[in-house]
Amino acid sequence: MVHMTMAPFALWLTGLPASGKSSIVARLLPKLASMDLTAEVLESDVVRRILTPEASYSKEERDLFYRALGFMGSRLLAHGVNVIIDATASRRAYREFARTLMPDLLEVSVECPIQICMERDKKGTYRRGLQGESSTVPGLQEPYEAPLSPDLIIRTTELLPDAAADHIVALIRSRRQS
Image 1 (cartoon, rainbow, N blue to C red):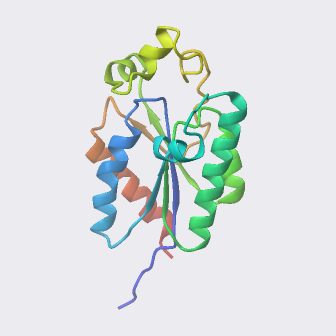
Image 2 (spheres, rainbow, N blue to C red):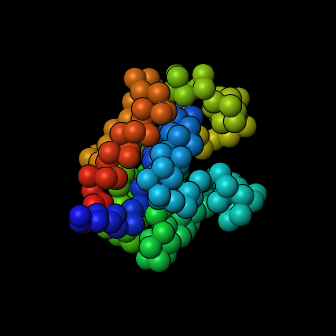
C-alpha cells in the first residue's frame, strides 16, 4: 500500500466583509481534523488586534497589515504548517504579494452580493460606513478587487458554509497530494 502524504498548503479566503469567510473556515477546520490535518488560521480581526490595536484602516496601515499577513503565512508554511488566511484583502496587490512569498497559495473567492453582506453584518462594518463613522469599508467607500482567476469560487448565496468547506477540502486534496 502506497501512503499518500499531503504537502503543507496555504489558502486565502477573500471576499467582502460579511460574505461568509469566517463561517466557512469554522466548518473547514473540523473537516481537516478528520483527515488528520491541522491548520493555523490567520484571521484578520484577530491579527489586527495585535498588529494595529487602534486600527485606522488607512491605505498605509492596510498595506503594512496585509504584507505582514503574507509574511506570517509564508513563515508558517516554510515550517510545514498548513495556513488559512481569512481576510478581505480588498486589493489584488495584497494577495499577489502573498503569492510571491507562497507561490502555491490557493485563492478562494467568497462571493456574495453586497446587499446580502450588509444584512449579515454582525460587526456593524457597513452600518458604520453608511453612517459616516468609517470611510474605508471595502465595497462601499473603498473598492473591492475580486480575484481575476481564483482557484475556487464560492457563492455563499448558493452554498451553505458546510458545503463550501467540502469544496475547499476537494481543492486542497487535488492540489496538495504528492
